[in-house]
Image (cartoon, rainbow, N blue to C red; front, side):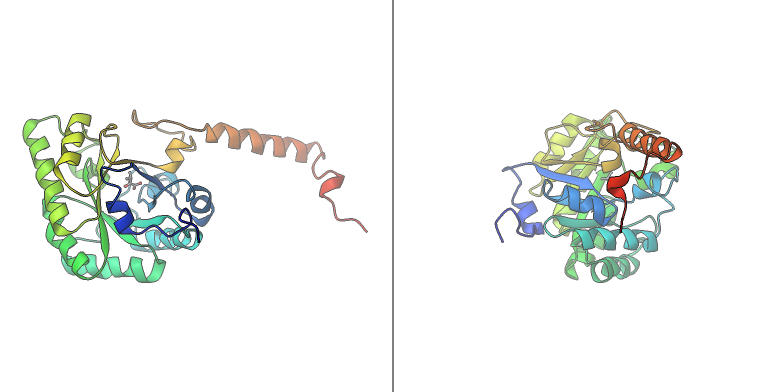
Length: 268
Ligand code: KIV
């Protein structure tokens, strides 16, 4: 196996701190995971799938069964990238529940690690998972699972005490044993300070460039999810248009009896 093909582990990710940016993307099935993994370090089975794939308005109704199904599909399709499964809302309300559900991800789906949202309030839970040999990625800043509680998606770090608390959160997560931390929807200068405050990689989403890596939701960055485009999303492909054009061409050819032409036929 060449170095490029070697399986990436959590230590490889940690070692990238101050050396090279970590590249992370979401995927929800084996098909896309296979396409992505040559170019990325981490594939996240994010609970964002509840919006783009399940058509819900937020992530809160994602269930363990759903996440296990998609995590298994991604793990099946991935050889090299590190796979991380999002623990859905309500699946880590206390240490016991968190441990039981995190073990399900590792044993049943075969992913390498889990991610959960929260700062100092989650430190003892994360410590418990790490003590049980489960690799954990933290997630602070804008936490989508809090959207109903907070009454919307709120950019973080605008107030001084909020910025200070985020740094405390990051330090608590590092102390608890996370191998990396996602910082979402946070002012760029605050995200930079967070990255400078800990020795594990800080992976940003909507948090500027001065962090240790980036993550984007694949259906956003490939332009498949048309309903909404947050400011921080760069569309690298106009996926929705390409797909629509292709399906339109197919439909037109079927209606005109132009497909299948001879080359697509089985003949005697
Ligand atoms: O669910 C998800 O896709 C995520 C990313 C936004 C980091 O948590």
